[in-house]
Length: 140
Image 1 (cartoon, rainbow, N blue to C red):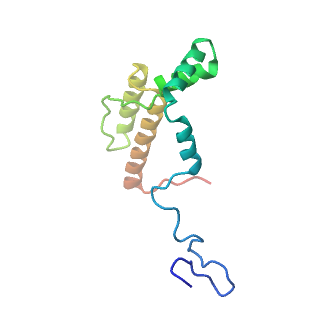
Image 2: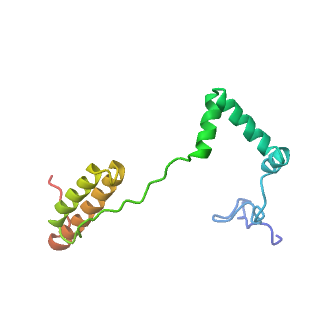
Image 3: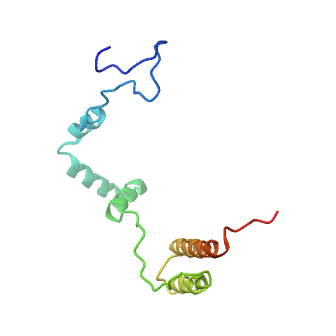
């Protein structure tokens, strides 16, 4: 067995945890299809872009969507800044819930982000409860 062969068991099967290709793909290598497409498009990018814009102006919805996705990429979640009281005990969670609802109502936060804040406060108050009284028990 040379150094490039992965170990096999006596039955000729690969030993568990070893690769069938120990050398693997060389670092930095690129897909052949990608390389060929890049060569075909080399120098044509500007002309293709102009054609897509032209089609979009004529009403081609796919071309229009393509242009809009490049001009205005999908919006990521934004940073939300509002005062949230410290939730050190379970009774503090109600004040935090009220602050979250107020922020959503005033447009400082969206509902999805608010749900995350609610979950964080609920988890924090549950941790406080379990520290004081032990883990919550379900009734049968």
